[in-house]
Image 1: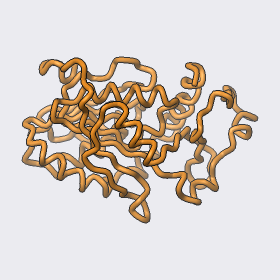
Image 2: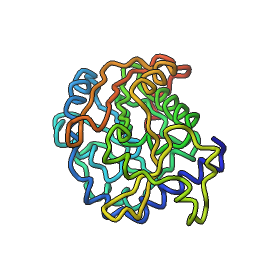
Image 3: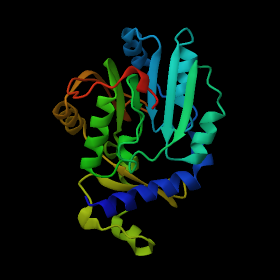
Image 4: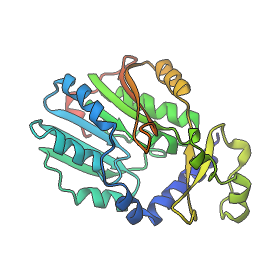
Length: 263
């Protein structure tokens, strides 16, 4: 996938979250059920303080979940997201952490500007399917792995929307989108699994989403040097809308310095 297509697909999602931030925030306030199982892995870290990077933090609800469920932990939390409106909403939560900050950052196009680490926990929830191009997805995962503390964990989800008829039946064909698009997508640059999903009952707003199967995700992670400590399905009506991967990283080349946690 070329750079022009990456930016065009990313622009679709930037526009969506700018235009629909209020509605999205209202519809995405509750914690995900799958986070409960993650707590077991966090407890095993025995990290003090617990240094957390929440990539694509949105309105900060994972940070709020940690504050509620781990009140006795010293937590240093950094949330990043490309939506100014959602970052603003996250800051309003006033998380009761010893150190908490939120940054507006487009990590799809930023290129090397992610906070340095090391982090005990990196969260990547509901985000990987919004990253255009296999090369970009692999690079993001590699960069996050290198920002983990030696015993730290990366917790990520892949949205299994393609496995459900209620989502498959609503996919917008790319030619239909291009017919009225100000910036049409070069369909020859798209990769298998690239889709447009409508939002809301009227289906006027759309998001770019990439579907990745459990097997392909597992292979990608292992090829990058991640060890999968836990894998499970959770969330949604039937408890299987997301596939969780809890990983450790062994393919590190340069250990980040302790003083560069939020640098």
